[in-house]
Length: 187
Image 1 (cartoon, rainbow, N blue to C red):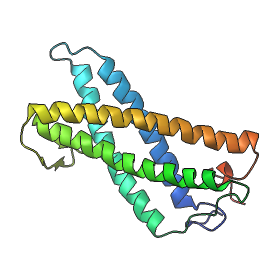
Image 2 (cartoon, helix red, strand yellow):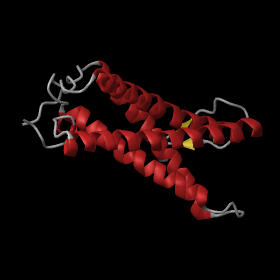
Image 3 (cartoon, rainbow, N blue to C red):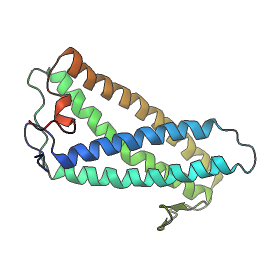
């Protein structure tokens, strides 16, 4: 039976569930974002508008999950890193995780501010709308588009490094790093 909380040896059920839900959501948001911006800006395109609205709603869900994940992390110990990892890799592992948290907050917030500057409300799956924190401002709107885009590219790079390192630990170094975060591996 899996433990809910983390131990010094592995992540608990809640951290593992939040990690993989967030991973799937971020990958979906990146794929959706890249696809929808590749569509032409040709008048009133219902498909593109629908995708943008879905992207916004999933982005706010990602923000809520990031806050939940951060709260869970603050209240739970981190499992120890594998003892054979050199100090520089331990530093980089922690640094990459901090960058992930920064991007998990910055991307949805810049998306929200982008919508606010465009004067377009952000609805959370029709349950409620988020407040606008900025007045309509086309310059700010375009600025937040650029910031959001480059943060997204940064997230793609970070995900690539993170997944590559995890797979390297698992298949090349054959250590326990990845197993600590895999669902269903409760040793």
